[in-house]
Length: 201
Image (cartoon, rainbow, N blue to C red):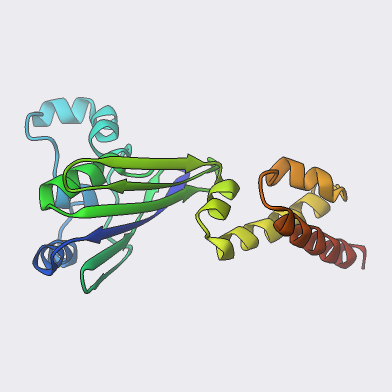
């Protein structure tokens, strides 16, 4: 079973274009997200695709396979947000083609818990790209996703104490979050002590 990458893809452009994309997503179709919006490379034959779909998908979409349009998506004024989960990696190449094909700008926030990554990529309609990638916890912290960060810290503290049978908070900090601020380290120490007291009781 694939490890999934959680994505929040924000598309910004004129309302007519965004409504067009939105309507494509709403229609009944057996096609997945990527094939609906950008299709398969037109220079590739059906036979070539079927014999090498894995590598072609990675090259053109950034993912090994397409995803069903069964995720949350939402249209607002000047913005369309998509929240698909993709196998193993974020669909950066898909978003690059999407931006240039529809003349929109795209912002991506993504993370993979099992594969320990978190990143932000911005793609412009002119084809420019900026990308920042970190380990999962570092990325949540750096990008200000603090609800996710603290939820993950609490879960890992519980696991560290109960399943690894380790009560050394400084070792926990060094292993998981060495780069956070001193203030955050202090808050983690308090949380760790609270969980330790619960475990002892």
